[in-house]
Length: 481
Image (cartoon, rainbow, N blue to C red; front, side, top):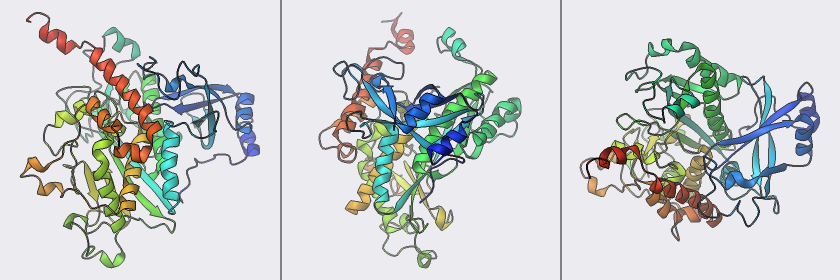
């Protein structure tokens, strides 16, 4: 199985003490349901005590409030008035050790959150949720592998200027539509290169980094690795880009659709499974490489293994019920609606090497057999990578366990008849309703406690939106109605 540990990560307390011998403090952080890092500095002595004592208290309110620290509209399971917003246990993961290059090289570790009574992961801990999915794969001696690609806008702004402007008339870093441009990166060369170089130093490996079409848009593909390490890297990549940006007078945004008339920002996810002997479970046998697998359900799956076909079927079968795990914000659905055409990633569609589908099947002959994988194109850059990866793998495992058949033909066969296309929910309210309904696939694979808590957080987001009066409404109705 692939190692999750960063380079230099300590394996024993003695190694940890030696690693920190010249330090006076340590930074730690965990992840909330919105994918926001919540952390603090700790003295070295307090940190070592927490590691030796198997955890330290962390206020549970980070699971009782939203992205702007407003408590949820109704009381939810983990943190509430009834339990006094009690502490939960933060357990340090020593395998996540790294130093923060832009912050005086301070040592840094991620934590996972445990219930103080049971010492088990709380139901909505993002790292704990993904770890549970990975443990299911481990029962079959499989390793979950993943990659994430982010598109994100850059603005010549900072938190003070955007507040002064009331988040309107923001100044993009560069003008025009210039995907894969060799020229636009010369305008902000130091910032553009620092993202790549600092990420390397921070042990967040990057495979590709370039401009994408849109004013001030970059796209960065993170290096393929084990799923938990990938989710960690994806969260930490946002942190480092925003931190580097602050020092350069740039405000990066991973909002899915910041402009109504421009393409949105995706957060595409690539996944595969590796066996204990290092083989890609989704790859066909060597003997089938020339002509493809004889018993494939469709021509498009001839170079996908039987297990890979069941995995694909599992995602397609449950996709409608888990959309909030892939598209968690009000704004994220504007990216999907903005596509309008059914082949945008807003439907239960798939296809061989097809960027017109929600799930792109990447197999020979377009890639080596060892690189066989699925690309899930529904998520935007605003996704929580732990939740997105969790639900993708859990749906896939369900497909393998039930030996599901692919429920719809490939997207190329649907181009002429949109009536056969199953559309995904196009707003957070509808998607959350499907997610929380009795008997949903989400409840089957994630459990009632998770669905009730996380679904409640999305219902809160919907309520906040429904109560808001937007600029569009004022501009449209103030004078004329």
